[in-house]
Image (cartoon, rainbow, N blue to C red):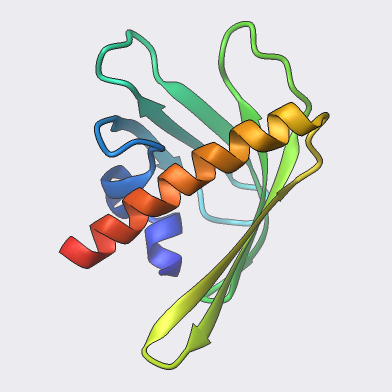
Length: 129
């Protein structure tokens, strides 16, 4: 599961909030202080939604912590923080995702919706792969 979140070849398979979308960007410099860029795109749109940030904690296979900002023209939002914990349970991995430091409830709700979509696509890719 840790590799699915940190290796571009796996991110291309699932990092998008809608299964009909594509993942045109998956760049990862996996080291503390390293940057990432992840893009998801509606095939009917010209530009992807690209998230970018910096890794703060890399503790394989248990935990990732990284900053999050959108590289979207006209979208101004302060950096937020993503914490992904991978807990081993019998025959599977429990994933705990915390995305915090949003400026308001609307941004929280919108990202919650997006993450639910991404996690649904991830589950589908793991089942088929």
